[in-house]
Length: 535
Image 1 (cartoon, helix red, strand yellow):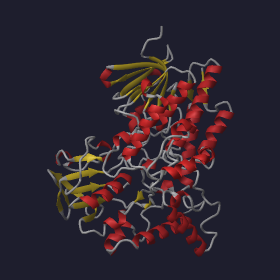
Image 2 (cartoon, helix red, strand yellow):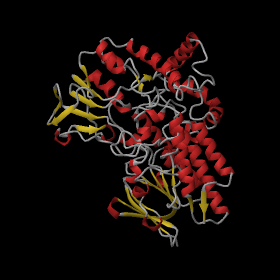
Image 3 (tube, helix red, strand yellow):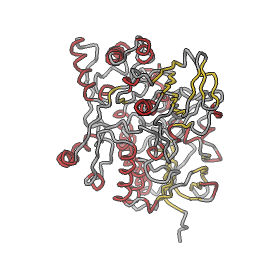
Image 4 (spheres, helix red, strand yellow):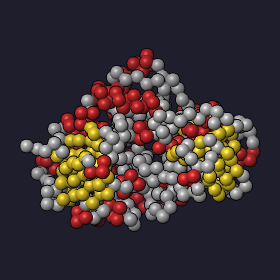
């Protein structure tokens, strides 16, 4: 009799990737369990409950292609807000009957591989929950560990200081409050937009300007979606094949430098007006690889933004004359009136490079030149992305090798899917994959099917373990280094490069070409899983 806590696979994380893997492995007859630290399905959407939170990938791209899920689901907006996304994940859960195999409120703390049994032992919630499994599948995503910078006195501010990813679940209204926001990435943009409309005062502490582009939000009707669903099967087929991620965003196969300025601006105008990520990834082929081509995109973006901002000093801080980094090498946020906020009397912009924060005290933030009394302090300071959530777990592979030690000098994987020395540990949407450049549900389905096929290959051949080889890990890492050096991403201190975390090794942590990445996965499988070793 199989013990109740013994499984073929245990999956960590109930976002798109974990839920899809649970659904498919169960279909294939595996005994599988999923665990997640949150109280319900949705991954980051459970924790990202800050005011103004919404997705920046548009639907129906940002949803599963499973007909049983999309057939009776109706969205209200092109870019849904957090609460609607939670309802969508609850719909997935209900339709696919997933919760019966999920342990919520269960945080994985430690996992170790036993070479004698070829199994993983997992411990959660202080040891009160334990699991044994042949496979451990990590679907923790790239944004599971918030980063809180070491600001002097930050622990003294009071109870109303929160990171956006640790916002109180009961909510904390910003109405009629004095609100400080540190950081202007995606969550910072969304909080600032909301706060500017309801708070008495908003103080924005900006270190590096964000290159935000129009979201172009739209309301969606049931009638229009019912009509569009006739084409969903073909749309999803296109979405999940090169050029993947977005079925309706295509990059031109020409250089920005090979067309006239008039034609170039026409292309930029069209992408800008479409909204979403069209202006980031849907213009010219060399915008992210050629510095001169990239500057044409930056100049266009800069001039469009500066036309919105009344104050010349604020305009220079928000959209500098000279690029602070190549356009698009930090993930552009999508904005809905963000730049207009800085025309309001209740919004102040502080450049903390020129005027750094010197001390935080109870309900106060002081810079070198000013002091601000605040009721609420929002830390929109991002994440220890890609690796932080994984090394926070005490994972020990063969012979007690810890993942933290294995990666202490830098990340090394085979295709972002496996690591030498960690048998039967497989990663979805993790470091050195195309995560953050590949739409979440798309990667969940494509990487997920690849993993299902890998496990079928093992079953067919009666293999007990799979892992990558050190040579394969080193080769993939070297390839990502080449990608960083041959594109513009290596020039920018971004979380793509791990450069937002002090003392973290600087390297490209996400593969910026999802088409090429998916092709690599397919070629690896076609070549008998080249770079992997089976026993």
